[in-house]
Length: 161
Image 1 (cartoon, rainbow, N blue to C red):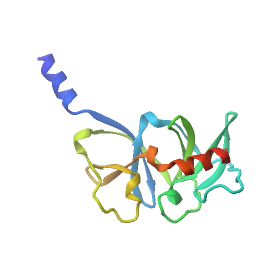
Image 2 (cartoon, rainbow, N blue to C red):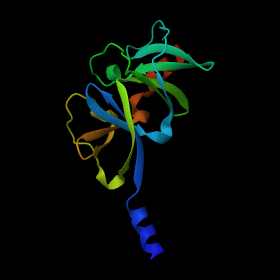
Image 3 (cartoon, rainbow, N blue to C red):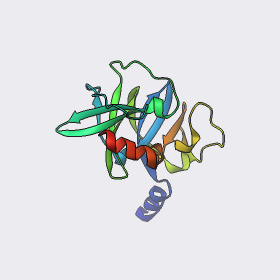
Image 4 (tube, one colour):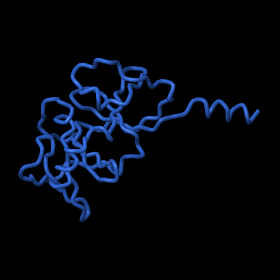
């Protein structure tokens, strides 16, 4: 009997995601990429940095570049408020902070509810979308953080830090 339960568990692999909102839409990223989630800090502007890079922050002695995820995804900028957070992630061996409107929750969703993104998705640059998760009450857009920063922009980001 125990082996049957194990087979069921293996066939419905759960993905652990951190979900957050941008422009009133739900997005998610793999929890294993997230180092921490912090409230907004004072961001130091860096001259000649790309538009989507707000600047750098000092987190426990580490200088980390901060990217406005709304701006990077082609959405309008928004004033930061008490819900605004910086999600600190590691992408391709680099630590980067992404500004999001609000972090909503940590989700565990079955991999069977995940589908490839449709060809045309309005409002978001579809090259950054890894998949779409079907939740009970909404769709969750899974962001591909590896693709968020293309090589030329990564070089500029490193120079900014």
